[in-house]
Image (cartoon, rainbow, N blue to C red):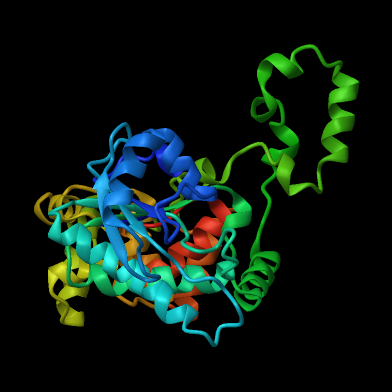
Length: 359
C-alpha cells in the first residue's frame, strides 16, 4: 500500500493505528499528546498508561483507541533535541521503526504518524522529516501497509534550504503563466463576490494582481489535470487508413515494454511508483485503460526514464507536461536530475503543491 501525506488534525484521521508522541511518564502533556488524550477521553487512556508505566525514549506501548477512527494508539517517546550529538537521530529512528513493527504485530493495514519530536521537543523539522521518510521507504519495500504522515500546518513541513533553493530556481526559470489570468479572473474568486463589483473596479483589481501568483484563478490541481497533447502529424505520402493501421505502440504496450527492458518485476514497479497493488493490476489487465496524469508521472519515476522517454510515455496516455503547472515542473526537474526516489519527490511536491504522485 502507498505512502500519503495529509494536512490535518491527526485525531480526525482514519487509520488502524494512530501514533502518539507521548510523554515518558503516564501523564497528559501537550501538543499531539494532549490533542489525542482530549479526543479519546483522558481518564480512559491515562488508566491504561498508568498500567504500562514509564516508556523509555525510542520505545513504544499500545492502548485502545476508544473514540478515534482507529483500532489502536501506539504511544512512542521521542528524543529531546540538544545538538544532534546525544543519540537524537537514533532515538527518533527507533520511534518510527518500533511503531511500524508493532503495527505489523497487530496485523494492521494502515498507520498514521505525526512528525515525532518536532514540537516542544525541538527536533529540527527538516531533519525529522528525512528520518521519517527514510524509515518509511525502507519499510515499504518489504511490507504491505498504508503509511499516512499527518502534518498540522504548512509551518510543520520544512525542506532543507538547498532543496528549496534549487526547486525555486527551476520553477522561476520555467514557469509559464497562461493568458487565462487576464481573460477569466472572475470564476476563481467566487461568482457571488464579483457579481456586484463594477466592471472598471474589477479590471483594476485584475491589473494590480497580475503579478501575484496567489491570485491566479485556476488551482494547480485542475491545471495539472488538463490533457495536453500535441497534434497528430500526418504524412501527405500516406493515406489516413494506412497511417491509422500503422499507429505506434499503445500506452499499455509501451509501459510493459519499458518494464521488460528495465528487468524490473511488477511488484517493484508499483512499490517504486507509490501505487496500490490493485491499481497497478488494473493497469496491467486492462490494455485500454489510461491512468491519471499523476499516475503516469509516478511510473516514469519508478522506471527511471529520461525526459524524452517520460514525454513519450505520457503522450501515449494522452497527457503532456504543462509549463504552467508547478507539479509538472518539479517532476520534470526530478527526472532531469535522476532523482528517482518517489517518497522524497512526494515530500517536495507536497511542500509546493499539496499534492503527491501515485496512491
